[in-house]
Amino acid sequence: MREVRSEWWREMVDPVMVVRVDRLPRTFPVRLPVSGDQLRRIMLTWKLRKERGGILTGRIVGQRVNILGKAMLYGLRHCEVALPFPRKLPIGYHSLVVEASGPGLNRRAEMTVVVVPDRCFLHPAVTESRRIWGLTVQLYGLRTAKNWGVGDFRDLREMIQWAGNDLGADLLGVNPLHALPPGQISPYSPSSRLFHHSLYLDIEGIPEFRDTPSVQKKFRAAAFQSKLASLRRSPMVQYEAVTRVKGQMLEALFRLFQRQHLAQKKSPEPVPSSVRSE
Image (cartoon, rainbow, N blue to C red):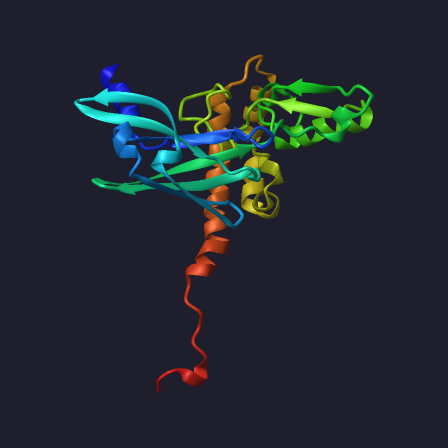
């Protein structure tokens, strides 16, 4: 505990400061390895660079700052002081640099200032007098005559259209659709916020699937159709089996994509006959 406490005192400023745009603080804390007497001879300057451009600066001598706290760490005195915080600051991620200089002291530190809204976004429909309603669906549990044993993005599109157009719903909630670590099936333990899970892809909606005779032949084969029918009939989602079936088709489509598109980009452009060496 002593080490943790001393580490906090050794940091000139906190790494991040989060404030509400409608409740900006009057000051922000800075910690320095000086005594109260030494503080009087210190010059403190700061520069805040706004996210969308613009710089705010300030400076103050140590004898004019308010001391928030004092500590003795390994025989060295420390002071926590309060520096003026900008009175107006827009929402965003801003960079604040603080410098302290004086006899025997020359320190510099940077802090990210995050100014957040006073509340989250509210859709106009929420603020209206009428009540809104919607449905929630676990996409992986949807079964249709077209999907491959697990609900996909085609099913989601049709579900949205049905809920909105036929039922008059205002919203549709779904489970997380992000990529998962290998071997995991829980949608609530994603490995990335940036990528969707390939299991939810509508394979039949991929252009190469529709336009390639060899892929269509494989899809229409009796054995393949029998496998899809078995996956649709299963009372439980067969994640491993669906992954294998979709994976095989995606690999075939990717090889086709490589031949038709990537190979063309990598091949050198032909040299005009007029500039070829004799």
